[in-house]
Image 1: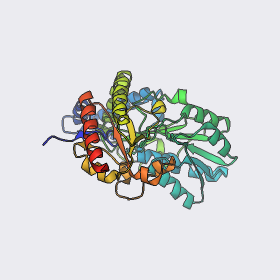
Image 2: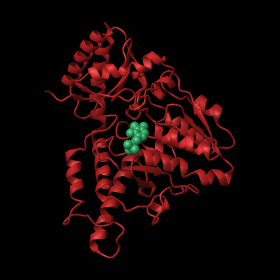
Image 3: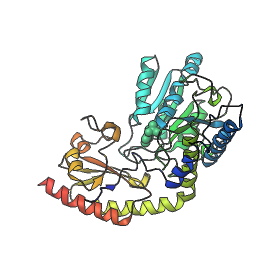
Image 4: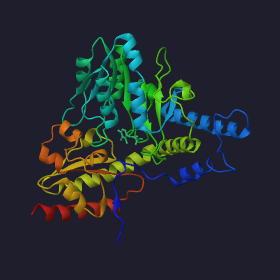
Length: 383
Ligand SMILES: *Cc1c(COP(=O)(O)O)cnc(C)c1O
């Protein structure tokens, strides 16, 4: 039996072998295994050096200052820290309004819901049919008591790209803080925090061929922007996030980020060509609707609806492919994806949609084989 073709890179990526090898050097006796906070011996110093070198490397890929990087366990924790970490500031300044969108990742949406229960007010902007939030929408929603605008750079189900540079500039004009969840954009398009002007940015290791369980939050160094820790115990990470730093994970994340940056232009071009090929295959099939706005989306994600079939049934029948219905996080629930209903897709079409995502190991032959398989299975199920 052939293994299914992996087309679920937006859910997770395999760790790069060179990254895994590097991580291994920071785990065992003879390697840099010690606690980076141990100040009393050379083992600790070496671990600390490895962590700080990784901080410099990661900061460089973002055009940030190393002191602006806070290590976390992943983008979920980064999102939680970015939002909840501002609550005390909001209460102090009497700013309790947050702007986000209806199609954010659950890490932002569930955090916002929790903050609403704590007395914050949240506006959930509705995206246009392409999954994009416009500057006009943000401008029309900003208020005197707005604390934060949190909008994702790239949507994880559709691939749509928001204009974060414009959004951050608008926020700055109104003296409102901005945060972006860049888990799907970092390493896959230019992410330069200076050029973008955002105040906070979340990223994750396992979306960029690094390990799971590690991420970072970029926090702009500016007067008064100190996030309140959500995890207490020792005051690591400039008081914003306690816990012994996982040297191997941190080194892995930074190495993966550097590799992504080195390959960014060539990989984007290669994956865009694969995406175009895949989309043109799909367009030849009757009753397939491309949900992704391919003129304004990241190349590695294609979301498509297969009218007249149930997505879950189609997914199971597509046994040669490893893919997702909507978002992986929704796979336990029978509700259509909040993203697809958020862009106004009819319930039946949302239920008939699948997400295909491409990455480093995807080849032209995989695209052709996947399309042939989809054509055959979809044709059979529609009858
Ligand atoms: C994957 C993902 C997350 C969650 O990241 P973890 O590191 O797995 O916690 C958050 N936001 C977006 C947009 C994602 O794609």
